[in-house]
Amino acid sequence: MSNELLRLDGVTKRYGPNTVLKDVSFTINKNEVVGLLGDNGAGKSTLVKIMSGVVPMTEGSYSWEGKAVPNVNRAETERLGVETIFQDSALVPQMSISRNIFMGREMTNALGFMKIKKMDDIASEILDTVVTIEGIKSSKQLVQSLSGGQAQAVAIARAVHFKRSLLILDEPTSALAVRATEALLDYLVQLKSEGVSSVLVTHNLHHAFQVCDRHIVMNHGKKILDVKREETTVEELTAAVVGGAEGLEKYRANKKK
Ligand SMILES: Nc1ncnc2c1ncn2[C@@H]1O[C@H](COP(=O)(O)OP(=O)(O)OP(=O)(O)O)[C@@H](O)[C@H]1O
Ligand SMILES: [Mg+2]
Image (cartoon, rainbow, N blue to C red; front, side, top):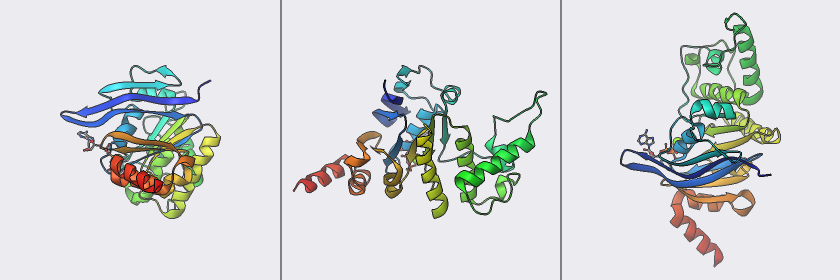
């Protein structure tokens, strides 16, 4: 049986005259943490949006466990169990932490009333266990009262609560302190043992190297490297991210000497 979870084949994305992804193909397997790396503007967030079904691809195909998904949209990826922490996480500042976590997926009773207490309790529990971030007193607190890192923790908690098969994280640690970052990275490894794969977008190659089983490097909308952890080094990843395909070639040529 194939171990394949999500596969993109020949994905191209154009915005008007600009081609931001060119013929990108890769697979995310079951029980795998994959690093999606590359410089600013390389196309990582666009890939994240395509994998999450919030932005359509111009050309290419999407398959899940070997079966083609003809109409990829958010409803479909939600059904498949994909959850995403977007780089520009959309939270509603005037609402509480728990309302933000359950936005659009509120728990209700038989009469249609929201189970506020239940949602508050679950929200507190996730914030205590997964992201363990300082200074959040209650899940009833309004998001506008939070710092950047605390708000990021809420976005993480939201995705973490609803994930079932794939968790996609676009720069999740950019506003987190060291301890919260370590907790999140550890959590990805734990999720893998529970059968949930992750895709981690990060500019921190040491973080990527610490937890990812495989690394995909993007450069100007093209995939230039797709390599298992044991077949690469932080130095090689750095060369690819910073220097693109040329930088990678140079690095490899120098290594051979
Ligand atoms: N809605 C859009 N309309 C037009 N161009 C876009 C749009 N979204 C992204 N782009 C362009 O696509 C390219 C890739 O952007 P993307 O956000 O995927 O990069 P990234 O790899 O996530 O970069 P970063 O590391 O800075 O987050 C950029 O050149 C960007 O300007
Ligand atoms: Mg991005």
